[in-house]
Picture (cartoon, one colour):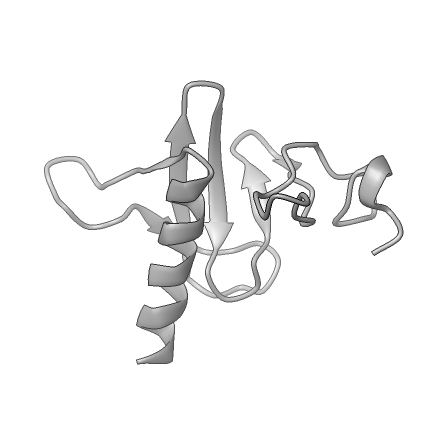
Length: 98
């Protein structure tokens, strides 16, 4: 039950940030894959006009599809930071102090 709640929470957060969940072709189910960070199959895909990302509901890692990880910080308004994370870090230069 916690797994479903985590995925639902992830979907709601991404919708608030302007993203649309990506579904499997011809189905209503989310397109989900294995997370490279934690190894669990809980990484759902989302898209909006400027980005296509995968977000893991288990560990929270956000990855731009194409290999560049997104900063894991949230802005003062509560939205996910849109910057690319620095190499060897989960945060961008502005949020490196986390």
